[in-house]
Length: 248
Image 1: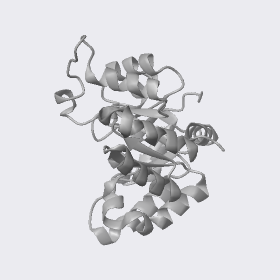
Image 2 (image 1 turned 90 degrees about the vertical axis):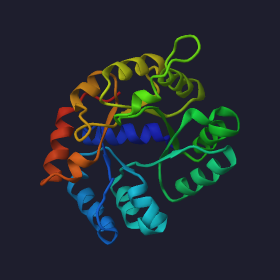
Image 3 (image 1 turned 30 degrees about the horizontal axis):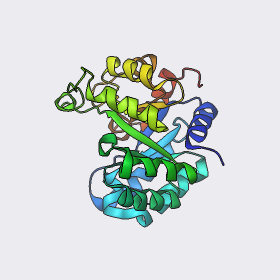
Image 4 (image 1 turned 90 degrees about the horizontal axis):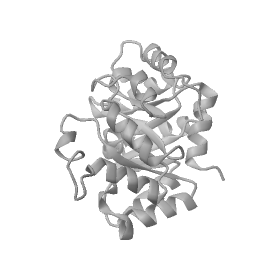
């Protein structure tokens, strides 16, 4: 059984892309799934994976986006559930087993809950099922410094502790903002070569794709700048070309 890391890197090499499309589609509920499918059809040749969050999962559920899931599977595009999983272990297990059974490949989770009765059993179970867990390390919104850069005892910042947890716990990847080259470089130093770094915040939030890759990111996560573009296919292809550093 291939691991999530193997699948997403294989997709990246096949397409020459480091772009993860965030299908954060807004607007009238009745049009969201159709709009998401249209954008996915337009960009599928230029992306390496797809991320879905509560814009679609909350109003439609897993059954309501089944066609999107099937399209991703048919195209060989790994699918990431961006739910920032953040509960006790027994609840987390219910969530991750349901998502992986519905053909998601990985889940984004919060390391704040800790390992015992938190993320430990989730990571273990995900790996048993061939799935992956990506941990939040440094988010891309403007209020990030109110939490992720707080100093801990000993002088480390919170995001550095989260990166260390990702390495120590055997997480498959981390989320680190494309808006902070320093955080990307520091996270890469901490997690090493075997933990993937996904960098959100490119485009609408001000992050630069090329800078994120050169600072240590394996993938960029892009949503609004592609979805809201007049030509999503052209924008996705532009980003693919801008970030096509050779895969590992």
